[in-house]
Image (cartoon, rainbow, N blue to C red):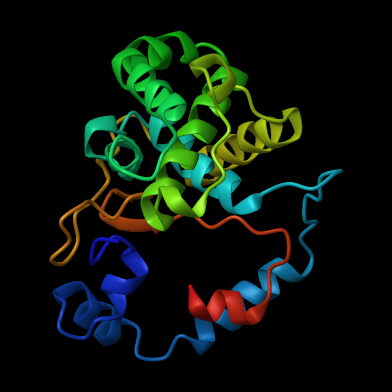
Length: 221
């Protein structure tokens, strides 16, 4: 894993300019945490039927939100690095073929999915899977995909969740037509961008997905 990939890690480093800024601007976060808890108290958490991999759904929401905001660059993403990892050692030859097909057809897949939310959600779940491979390494997965078509099919429940959550996130941001947006911002000494984050009109945004909001999660964020 490349140093500085997670924006949270960069913010926590006191030697980083953004880390110093956050500590100077927000010396005591307890007031903000308590305010957020009050806002969350009466919220109705969306709980789907069935078992869903929210870690992967959360990453897919990151991708789909940035695609919605037209600030996603596939070539500068951790998903792209996941393909590079998979084409190395540790992946079955059948999945290497899937990665090569995905790489050669990404622009076409992206263009076809732009007008169809479900297709876009499936594409983003595939991007999230490739990111997981990069973060954990190909050896951490039992990879069974044997064709690109199979790789682009995901459970209906997870696909619908990505659609719903990315739509809600985009609406919550209330993005104006003249907003200044920076996707994949490079923070600190990162070799790769802090993937999954964006800067909107000078505000650094880190999307989190959870079905169980708790104080300790807010404090960590």
